[in-house]
Length: 402
Image (cartoon, rainbow, N blue to C red; front, side):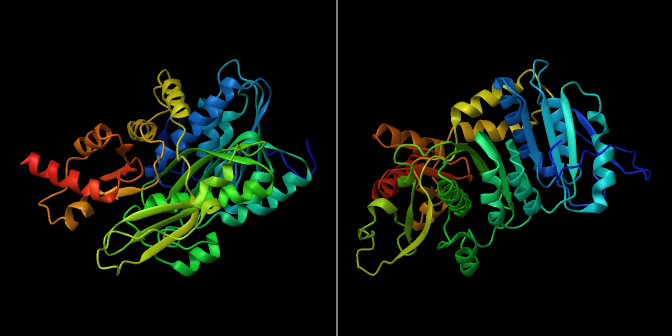
């Protein structure tokens, strides 16, 4: 085993702790932070691992950087590996030494599982990543489920991620990227963040912009696989590429919105010039600009479809909420960038209520525009239609619905 790492033998936890069942595992969650409601994101992590294992022709190494009670690693080992799997190394780390005995007790079920080797550590995340780089240890999948903003760890994590490897990232920093703490947004993201009806999506795009810049500094490319939020935690899955895609830098840009009329505009940084006038007829409108942020896709629908197919014979792996999440994300790749709240559009028109979302989407598609319901926030429409036409369609469909 490489220097600096310690293989840990599992021992039984003496104090009785309540058990929690999820997927194929039953484990003790202990007294530390644990959210049952985060199961859909864990389901996704397991399916991504299973998809990777089903295609791999060589040994794999997966890292849970902030393992907590060990639920992700345990599910990886028990649910994500087919019988024909290559050898698998599971690395589970948690910086809190008080959780070591709980972690080791939960992981006992992996002892003797064919082809699976297990290493646990109690290191600070930054130390583990830097030591892995010094020892030239690379991972095919890294799950970084962070408290607060994870940006200080991103370059170290990407530096030990294999080409075509996956980074599963979580952030609980909700204030700064949604425009509620603009100074913190400058510190954490190097960006302006302004309040916006599609605030969750802009938070995800700001996070993707940081990830892309970190990957580009390493000479690597980046592909978003999945992006979503429930408002408290922002979650991303990205794939690291050996090289940048053609014109990948054009995916970084700015989004502007006028608070008075609600109009929106987007510009890539590579083609940045003066902003057009908004819809304010008196010339008093003023753009509020967010960015730099990611202007490219948020999801890879083809990969999400493969995950859903992979889950069909594994009845325990994908919860009902997890399946609904994947189906929703699959239907919205994240383009065009501009999202519109139907409730806000109705309010600006003084309508009795928002227009039926699906009818509005179909009308815009029939008019030759791109349009779909947003998978990131409910009640929102993604389209490239000009705002004037969007408002006109809202009036027609609310009137026609009466």
